[in-house]
Image (cartoon, rainbow, N blue to C red; front, side, top):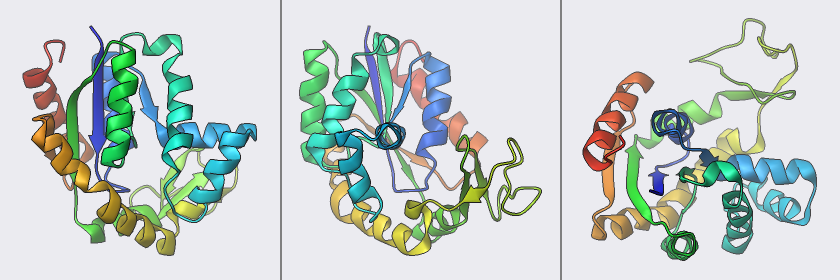
Length: 221
C-alpha cells in the first residue's frame, strides 16, 4: 500500500525534523524540496540554476521547476511504498499537481499534518541558524551553539548563515507563507485530510503527538 504524508507549516516550525521522525516510524523516505533544490543547485544543472535565482531572494521556486524535480525523485527505488513530503505542496495549485502526480503512481495523499507556531518564535529560530560548509550540519546561536564560534563541532569546517536564514529573508519567507501557503489549510480541511499539531512544544512532545495521530489514521502507524 502506498502511503503519502504531507507536512504543512511556516518556515522554521520544525517540518524537517518531524518529517525525519515520521520517515523512521513508517520506513518511508523523507523528501524535502529544500534538499532537492540544494542538490540540483550543487550539481549546477538548469533546474538548479532556476531554483537558486528564486531561493537566494527568499522567494518560492516556480511550480513547474519544483514538480520536475519531484517527478524525478519519485522514480527512485526508495519511493516504491510512498514518501513523507516536506515543503511541497505550498499552494492549492501545487496540491492539485501533486494529486495528479500521485494518481499516476497509483497513490494519493493519506494525511496532512499542519504544524503551527507564533511568528515571533519562528523568526528567533531561523535567524539564529548557522550551517557548516562541508556537510550541512546545523547549529543555532541560542538553542544549539557550536563549542567554538564559527566552527562546526563535527567536521571543523566554517559555519555560515544561508541567505534564506538571514533575518530580512526570514521575514519575507513568513509573509510569502501567509499569503500563498495558508490557503492549503482550507484546501486539505475540506478534504478531511488535515490534522493540526502544536509546534511550539519540545521536539519530543511534537513527535509524540504526531505518533498518536499516525496510529489513529494509518493502520501501519
